[in-house]
Length: 438
Image (cartoon, rainbow, N blue to C red):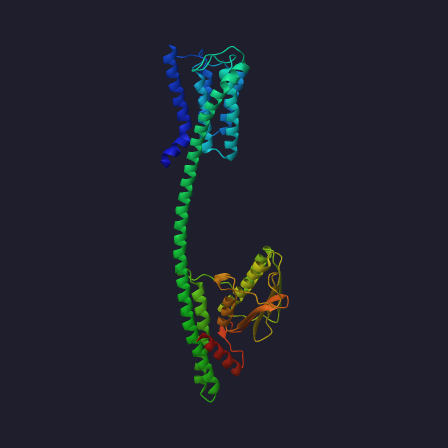
């Protein structure tokens, strides 16, 4: 059915015009005797109406213009008036109306309906008036004057033409609605299939994320315990031989390296199993520049001497800054002022980020902070990244500002891990991290 409609839509109008022309010529030849020649009064209207139908589907305005030109030509006696049995040629205008209602846009349809109402009025006048016609099939011409004839017969002829035009136009509208419904049905099927695929991908991704979290929790707990036990044994056994102390230190360093690298690998593995390149601190500058282009007013400053961080720690810094800027743009909108400061003067990198509180958040009220930002974790995700990097993070309203403060200890310099806190601080920090992961 759909294929048939498509063929009729593209080739139906010319085919209908050709058939209309041939059948009419054959019929007239049989009724009038010899094959009609150029002397035949209905030849020019038939050719024009054939063109009207043939151009309806691809040149609606031209089709209407041809009908108007024919009627104006007959009113001005440029085109010969048709005989009594030739008036049905005017039905070509209504066939054209049906094609325009099927394939045309809203403007073309409105113009076609308005024009055909005017065409029907002119046709009615010429078919009844003795000046232009020789009567119609069911009544002969009357010579009592056009005003008398119009009063007696317009209510018979005009409604008949209106009924035929309405039937053709309604059929065109039905065909258009049918095509629209088919298109919507096909789009709905495609959308449902896409939603099913997306749902499957989402389920797989959620399961992959859950497995990754479980794996990380297991590794984090075990490696943190190993590092804490190794450091504790080394600090409490200073009278042991130096090789033993070196071995304990190597165990602690390797455990911390493994903890950071495991997190980086888990987050960097794509669906194809390849490790994707992860952003570093050097990518923070381009990130801010892109966000400035998104209408954020970012003020970036640093103090102290920058220290090289491990790859996992650099990734954590980048993601924390990215989350802060994204939340500022999301809650504050365009033009929000954001201040980002890196302090390298302490035992680790201290990151400060602040932006004005949204108007919808009252002063002193905690921001929800649960926007499903990157990976859908918001502030909890930032805290987790800071903890995985060996540090901590706090976030909340501070006066009229929403402030995020993160601390990332210096874990590695030039590829080796160095322990910067004092022994007691290190044991306390590792103990807290171990209890958090347990």
